[in-house]
Length: 268
Image (cartoon, rainbow, N blue to C red; front, side, top):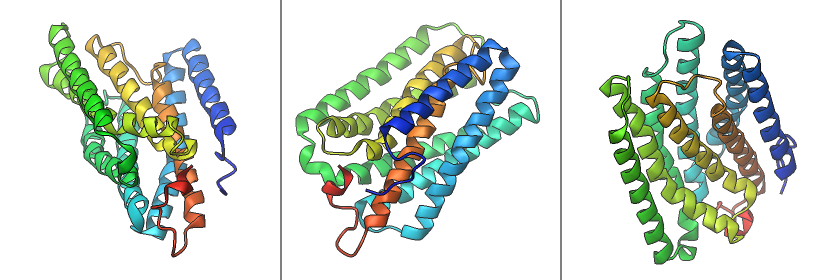
């Protein structure tokens, strides 16, 4: 499969993940201001090409096949989160005000239902590989995670206003719901039914889930700030998304009248 040389395999992606982690940790060593600027710059540097690739493929390919439809929703979700990231960055670096809560939250939260629809079309061609036992197990895990988060938050004493606390709780709950398609997709990956690069679209969301949990717990005692080491996971998420986007580009190049993204063999 022909893919971008920038992110064409596991080794280049692993190198970029390591570089991002090193840069963020180094920036933190030199102080909070450097960490804020570095994290914001890396976020912009990764998300701009991600949006460009996503939008270009969205315009060029349309809604052909299950994976074509999945891409429409994935690209829409990425664009919404890109807008949210820019609102956060402008609020913090230009207006020097606390970006949470802000208008950015509307765009982030609006992206979740769109991601769910993407996951539906992503997994639809593999429905014969998804057993009832796996589905029930994943649903139980999702319910348990959501219940734990709600219970844990009720026990915490926080200086945040009630609205801010509840808004912060919405993210890990939405992420807990996102765990269902993520886990199912990753099970398919470890079974060898889906390629690594195409699964990056799910690995990226998994990074967001873990990062959002960290953000929520750190926000309760107001210890989160842009540039915090937890941001490494957010940046990793976008790198995984970019890698998956480039993988999709490879599938697009192979598409013809007999291949409408419904052949599972093309994703291995």
